[in-house]
Image (cartoon, rainbow, N blue to C red; front, side, top):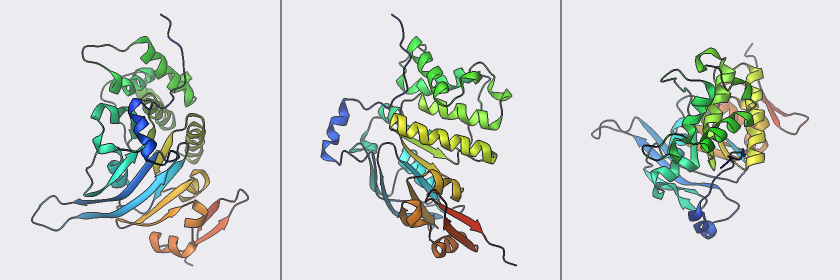
Amino acid sequence: MSTQLRSPLPRGGAADTDSTRANSDIRLSVEQISYAYTPNPSQAPLFTLEATSFQAKPGEIVAILGPNACGKSTLLKLISGALEPLSGRIFLNGLATNALPLKTRAQRIALVQQESPLLFPSRAWEFVLQGRHPYGRSLRFETAEDIAIAKNALAQVNASHLSDRWMDKISGGEKQRVVLARALAQQPLLLLLDEPTLHLDIGAQVDLLVSLRRLAAENRYTVVVVTHELNLAGEFADQVVLMQKGKCLRVGPPASVYQRELLEQVFQAPLSVELAGSGRPRVTLLSNT
């Protein structure tokens, strides 16, 4: 039987019919999530994330912004299921994520972390094939369909030309595209990225975010991105979640969140904010002299 090459569209599954109890326009609902990191139960928490809430629709990009150690990556890990919240719940298509079987959760939520170490030598298409692991069965090799989906995921991020290249022989920007393709091979509903533009030059940063914008629109992915890049987030995100010291200060479209006084309070620097020709906010660091 021949294998049809198809776009790695998100998979829902029969259980998604339960989502009729929720707003069908909402893909992700984060409801009053909190967390406390306490390595020693007899001591006070070293870090606390206060109750945080936001919602996102299919096709939307949400950027989580804030200075270092404000809780951005912690919030992303809570959404992914890597951390257990102290309180609150997270719903994906109306279903509580902590109630989903681990295999189902791995199929529906893809997490791209800051660093993706190469555990063993592999070509790009073999690396992307790791994204098919949640669909595997014991004692089963990858199928022709798995390979087709992996190679199509590379095509989705304009990296087909890298398919047979060794991962340790490609540039940082090229590697980030392949890492994104591995996440797409999971065929997720929710795509989470932690600092995807880290260590990339500005051209590669823009290129990657243009791809994310296109993929979110074409495949109806819900995308949540942790980033320090205020202007890129302002240009490409539908919503931003602004955080400071474990608190969610404001959630909304970039133009409503990017208020000069608020951003100066969060980032402790003199800034100016203006609307670009696109209607998107642009932030400029002002000189102290």
